[in-house]
Length: 141
Ligand SMILES: CC(C)(COP(=O)(O)OP(=O)(O)OC[C@H]1O[C@@H](n2cnc3c(N)ncnc32)[C@H](O)[C@@H]1OP(=O)(O)O)[C@@H](O)C(=O)NCCC(=O)NCCS
Image (cartoon, rainbow, N blue to C red; front, side, top):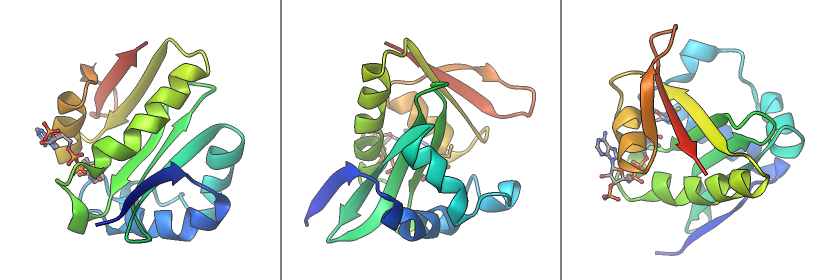
């Protein structure tokens, strides 16, 4: 199985958005304002993204914002969960964010979702439930 993790480019947006729309939890319906155009600044100016390709097809991606330290997205296509792809695709993003000089990076995700367990299992520190009822995590350099 050929697995590649590389930095995302604008041409990857349709494939990333397809992955995002396919997930069972943290679904897009909770934030219908996200369209393909929405990704552009997150990949070019306010952040950077990484994609994981399995046999040339994008099945996971991660996007982080270097101005704020916020993780904007970590998504794995539901047919490919549990293969370590979430872990693999977030690694270069985390490294890159700390390389930009950030001391702290952070994210929120739906409480009691698979993602909450994933972040707890992959080195993130749970910091509590925020005002929207979401689970908050951080990581220090
Ligand atoms: C959450 C998500 C990114 C996890 O991706 P994944 O590829 O299935 O996770 P991985 O296989 O890389 O798991 C990495 C580690 O976390 C562990 N893990 C994953 N989910 C877990 C859970 N719910 N509870 C405990 N451990 C968990 C795995 O066992 C693995 O541990 P190991 O390395 O010791 O074997 C993926 O399920 C997803 O995209 N979900 C839907 C979208 C979403 O909720 N994204 C987050 C939005 S903020």
